[in-house]
Amino acid sequence: MDKKPGRSQEPEVRKGPWTMEEDLILMNYIGNHGEGEWNSLARSAGLKRTGKSCRLRWLNYLKPDVRRGNITAEEQLLIMELHARWGNRWSKIAKHLPGRTDNEIKNYWRTKIRKHIKEAENNPSQSSEINPEQTTSSQVSSDANAVEPCSPTYTGNLQEAWMGALPTESNDSFWSVEDLWYMP
DNA sequence: AATTATTTCAACCGCATCGCT
DNA sequence: TAGCGATGCGGTTGAAATAAT
Image (tube, rainbow, N blue to C red; front, top):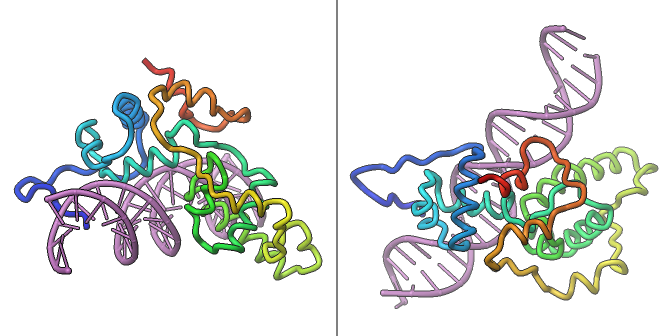
């Protein structure tokens, strides 16, 4: 797999949290060239990151149509329904939740829903709010069967795309992605 | 106010799959 | 068709944030 590109000199590879500067570089590069060919993208953009890392950062965080903020009750129901159907096929599930990433859904499941299941098991009388075994197919089944993933293709104007996709409750903590789009 | 425990989530890792030669 | 590189996916980790004591 991760083959060494050069035998003689090992390229420096950064790991860990992305800096604002790296985010900017990645966004600028993708804004100009589009996404894809992640390894060469990482090299050409001058990022000391692996292509994998760039892809993950873009898809899970920087991409304009990534929705941030709380999972809604509808989304939660949908996640439970789809998980009951497909199991841990997070990317498949994510395709039915526009703007949500597989990573986000996976994390959400592991933290919130599993916790509720555990609580429900310990306390069956209070388990009415969330019950993953009780699928609510009437609400979501038709939608789930129509597999129409939102198009990830590069449209050429990322900033417009981002503005259109801005969540209304985007008062998230720390510096946010929208801050980056307005940087010179 | 300080310390400890718990939760959250961004990012990494390894494996599987795909497409090209 | 085997070999190889690129990409995608799911599991896992660990640092930061938050809650509890």
